[in-house]
Image 1 (spheres, rainbow over the protein chains, first blue to last red):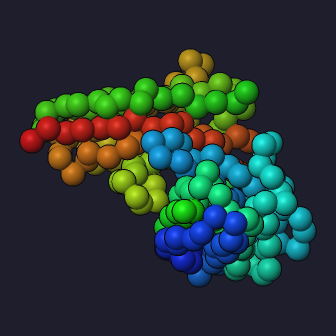
Image 2: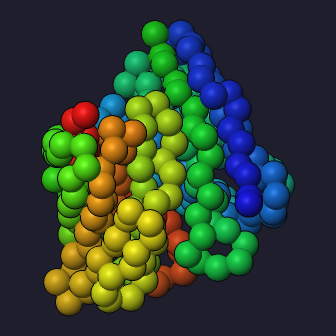
Image 3: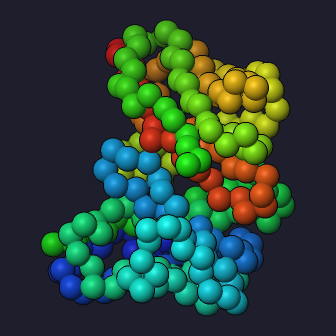
Length: 116
Length: 112
């Protein structure tokens, strides 16, 4: 089956620094990738939709200047958390719609970000 | 506000019992419904998907969908301690956007 990778799997950084998270599709080309975050004991919340070759679409309340998304190729999307603060500490997951139909969804393994 | 609602639990059942997890959704345009299991610190994994009214069975799991009542449930028969996890209900609409909307999850505890 399709495989999605994320790197790094976990990262600890100091407040004010920037962190880049990569999401790669290993088996198919993905024109769209969804970025979610999950705070402890809460659900996955959609942050933005990453579109290959065009600008990302951000959900209401998500700062696009803080969470920079670059869909550089059909197999790679990156999420950069700029000037990270402790409240950005979360579990970040990318989810890819599958190539064969709209009911398929492939999950990345997630990236645990801790900002000190 | 389009929402997916679940009881946060914890739902505690003895080993071997049936666990019943419920979910309601607000968007009548929802077309696809999913149940995911999530262990602490891990990404969710798909258990069941259901698209039409009625029941769908897969092993110990049965998903039930009632679009008129905007209700979807998951039954787990012969519950095992390894089933202890958080169960997320998710829906997607027919808009073509394909992004999933998740409920907040129900934590299930299966007591040995």
